[in-house]
Image 1: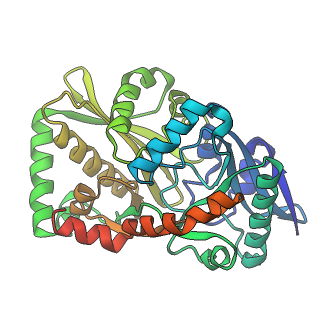
Image 2 (image 1 turned 90 degrees about the horizontal axis):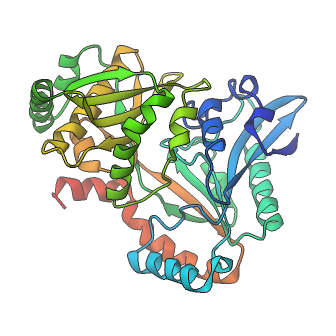
Image 3 (image 1 turned 180 degrees about the horizontal axis):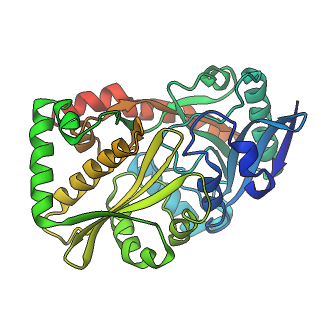
Length: 373
């Protein structure tokens, strides 16, 4: 068993990644390749691979740079203070950061080969991240959005990481066989809401699924950006090139769901699917439309129905906007950030960061939603 670090996913190849088990969409060859080909600023990627006798046993992408959004979940004054420091003191004060994991992950299962020595593979990955951090003189490293059910999560807990809650992901069982079966499985409030949304959307809009093609990007990207700017937690923004690149290589398969009022696109949803899972990622809304809440709910319901049409039993709806997604049948699943500081000042701040991020526990968020907070 040995560790190899590659600077392009093309050097690994889809045929070596495909046998791995984990998150078949989030860590798929096509999605990671699209991200690699649309990186921004000084961000670059390295792929930490653990290999044996030519077989790939496990891997994780590691994104390195100062232009990575690592303050999204921090309190407003801290974010403002860091931004002010960089603005007034120069980019030399910016933190060098490594983020290990898929930048748009909704289900953080690190891909591993069935039957491998999981603990040894994960320990090798962790050691390689330390090597990368030392080589690039980084301030800190994140292992991003490790899912609560990932069987190797204790390996990160055994190392010198601060374990923090990330935003929980929203999962929906989409093993139903019809629209009526889906609605019947919701709460009374959810059933009423779903019927109202489907009825009103049919009257107001046309919803259709289309291939993601380059000429589609100018029509939907302004909507995606408007939603990003409106979001309370500004995670990584996908650049326009990612949208066109994501359709160029499979897996995963991809498409866009459009919501149109006449000849005008007023809503869009990017959808990726592979190996029995669907990732509904990045919604875009025309907030100038008086029915923008209806657009949002209609896109989500039609995306779930689309998964059922394809006999995909599990869909993920992202890590924000929990109230409407729970009403649509979603359940919250905890995800974790494992953070390591390589500078004394960063290490000293980690206990406070961990305390602050307790607010992102799935149980606490679900309770707040039920109480209308």
